[in-house]
Amino acid sequence: MGLESYLKESGFITTKLDAIIGWARKNSVWPMPMGISCCAIEMMAVGDPKYDIARFGSEVMRFTPRQCDLMIVAGTVTYKMAPVVKKIFDQMPDPKWVIAMGACTSSGGMYRSYSVVQGIDQFLPVDIYLAGCPPRPDNLLYALMKIQDKIGKTKAAEFKNLPELNVIQNN
Amino acid sequence: MNLKELVPQKLKEKFPDVSFYISDYKDELTIKFDKKNVVSVCKYLKEDDDLQFNYCTDVTAVDWAKRKERFTVVYNIFSMKNNFRLRLKSDVDESDCAIDSVSLVWGSANWHERETFDMYGIKFNNHPDLRRMYMPEEFEYHPLRKDFPLMGIPGSLPLPKK
Image 1 (cartoon, each protein chain N blue to C red):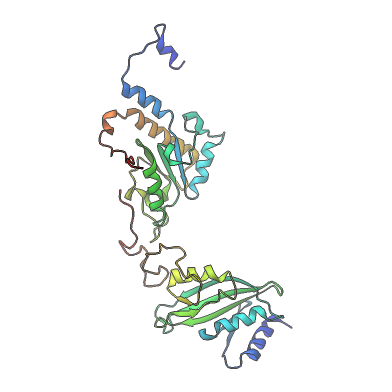
Image 2 (image 1 turned 120 degrees about the horizontal axis):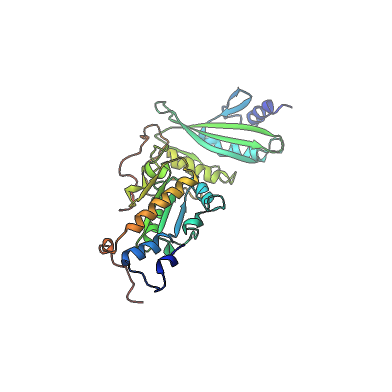
């Protein structure tokens, strides 16, 4: 069971740092619940005991973007809301991932109109597009597992092009 | 006395110079009159002891596109005392696209008038705070006008950079 079975008597294992960081990272994804409309109801259901997102180590829904690494955009994003979503996304520390949950977020959905952004990939780097209107909670768990696969395969070399942190130098 | 007869009768007695067009369709009473009397008529309907239309349910507008008087502003009001609903209408032309505000008569008309201004571009004179309700403040168009395209005008609503 678990890590102990690999340790044997010696207490050592040989692995790559990428693998061990990816393993730790993918099992502790902290989501930013960007619940904008009805998809947020299904996202709440994911947290309840029936579906239980805690099985995947993601039960800590952080309501501050500064402690998150996965943004679940759940709901219709209007042009007026888009700068707000982007502002919150920008405050999340790197590395970070995005799930576009539901038809509206992925493509505008049934709101083919002047006020709704026709897909948030116009201003956010989306990793997973999740179908459904709204998607069932198990669908969201499936998207989370896909994200975990992606995070587990991430290598440190992929992050060398990230923009530098904007640290305020002078008080 | 029946409210349907009382309301037009009292209005005609109080405002002999104003012409009221009264229609009673599907048990809904609608009264249409010139836009320059809107505040005095509304104030009277609210403050008269027998009528007491003390709740303004909605203010909205209709765009008739090709008609000579392009817009109609519609007020749905309600009398809690009599449990009676009344609809008031007033035409507004595009060349003089403004009507007097009734937000000082009914407080709830404030936001309804802002919404109507946002969606149709009808100005409400003497409104205390006539800003857009839904669309961003720098937006230049009025989406519920018939000549506004469904998918909007490209580039009129900026998105953040990727």
